[in-house]
Amino acid sequence: AAAPRRLPRLGSPRSGAAAAEAMPVSGGSGEQALHVGREYDSAGDDLRGLLQGASDAKFDFVVIPLFGKKPAALEGEYELLPATASDLSADSKTWSSAVVGTLSEWLDPGPDASQKHRDFCREALEKELHWASHLGVYGILLPPPLSTRCELYAAALGRQMLGGICTTQLMVRIPLVRECTGGQVDGWQVWNTFRMLCDHNVRLQVALELTADLPTSERELERWFAEPIRAVIVPADIFLTNKQGFPVLSKRHKTFLMELFRYRVQVIIQGLTDSPGAEAENDKYLHYVARLFQGRPPLTSQEQFELPYHDYLQAPLQPLQDDLESQTYETFEKDPVKYVQYEEAILKCFQDMLAAGKPQPLAAIVVGAGRGPLVCAVRSAAERAKADVKVWAVEKNPNAVITLKHRAKLEGWNNVEIIGQDMRFWDAPRAADLLVSELLGSFGDNELSPECLDGAQRFLAKDGVCIPQRYISSLTPVTSPKLWNDVKNYNDVAHFETAYVVKFHQAFYPSKEIKECFTFEHPNWELSSNDRYAEIEFTPEVDALVHGFAGYFHCDLYAGHSVSICPTTYSEGMFSWFPIYFPLKTPVFIREGQTLRSHWWRCHNDRKVWYEWAVSQPTPSPVHNPGGRAYHVGK
Image 1 (cartoon, rainbow, N blue to C red):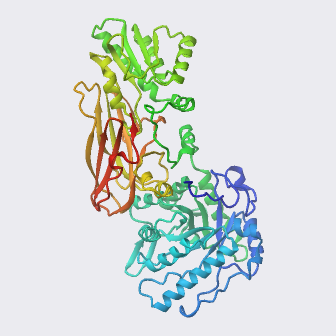
Image 2: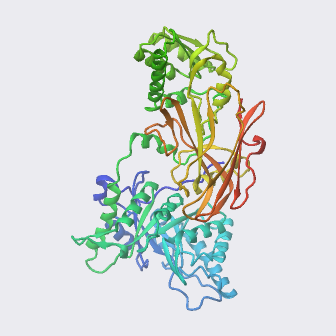
Image 3: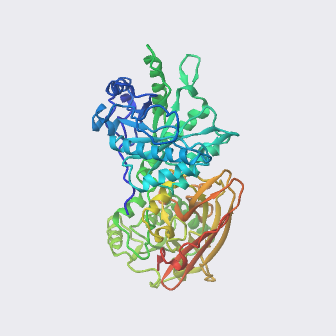
């Protein structure tokens, strides 16, 4: 199933020198661009004139109310009174590319409304959505739910979305903090309740309104970075005035907005005035936002590489079962960190062997040699250690073997013998002093490194060394509506019982705890079982909706040299592995301080290895992937 269609962005890019030039309301677009709109209290009698004024003021789009004033009585039959005379107020291209329309602010009847009031609001919502869809506006901005008791509003909207009445994107306005009867309510709690009542509908996005008061903790703000925020509404009245008389945001507001820029949000400035001579003052707000955007640090080369992979579900590689392609080898070989660490570990190993008086030539076997990067690391380490080393490069992929033989001839690998066989069935001519491999997956053992190395250790001398020596997988709960909805779009159980390689981007980690799961050590002379079970508990620091778990690994190569994608020990600059994502069929809502208890199994039979996972607290979930029915790694 295809992912939801991504609509084009409004307006023209506001980046670099372009920010200083006049920009039409409906111009070009770009992934690394900022688009700023202005919200008006009224569309007025001349929509074309309003659009021209917005264009002259360098705004990219406008947000206007589509309907008139609030009716005197919220019962009876709702009479639709558009704020503009008709759809002829603008041409269809302008409606669809430059106008976001807001619906009436009173559409949520609240939990205590009478039947007549509820019916009136439901009918109004239906008619207003019909009219907005008829206009073909680029976006529809829904009013905020009054509180977490928004069942009637969510149900009415859900019916309309299910019926296909809305042909454009829907954004619900959510203030960061909302004043309600009895005190302030956190906007995330309102949004979370509303989206769950709407069955996590992927078409429902957030227009997040900054408020003068912000949530108390930084974790409450960070929680928003996982949510589908399409636009950020910045009211003019939350700005402060600096010593030079220019509007600026407070430090926390500024930091939060700067972080939101990483998620390609649009900005809507609200509350500007249209009094005579106000243009220069209004321009200060626009330029301030543009300067913040331009002040972002440039992307590093690693960030540029990772950009296309953000929140993109990938099936884990199965190199034991499938032969890798040339492009895959080439991508991994460009890693600037991994092979440096391997070479340093191998160098230290050779130095220790020579210091211990091991007779030369030393024997090194590279299993899963690929196109030869580890062979180069062994040869380079041997030269630096001034050690005489004989190398066997074992690779089952016949296409990679051709490359190995070509490199051996081209680069003069006189001390290397290339073996085009499966390591599990090849017999080594002598016991090896060193066994080197890079069979790790994103979860450490998920590409069957334990099974492969257990089979290959028969080559190893009793005092021989295996590199890597140990690897540990680890887990943490993750909030990611984007990834969960992408899995949901497949519309089957199997995809919720599959693990995915993912570069997490639009994600939040409700617990700062990253806990160890499975550990494997080599050589495994006792041939202990590679099946595992772990029970792992987490305690979130903030209320959250958990969509699954992010998995990592840390690998000890030799004598303090390691490679790791675990955030606590991450190998800076390494990009050979992205984390792994284990989804949950049903997201789990958990309160701050509650216990999230998870269960993890690694199982096998004669043909395959697989994982099973489940949550038992705060609410039990089914065991995912029993018997490897949906996802497994073939032997």
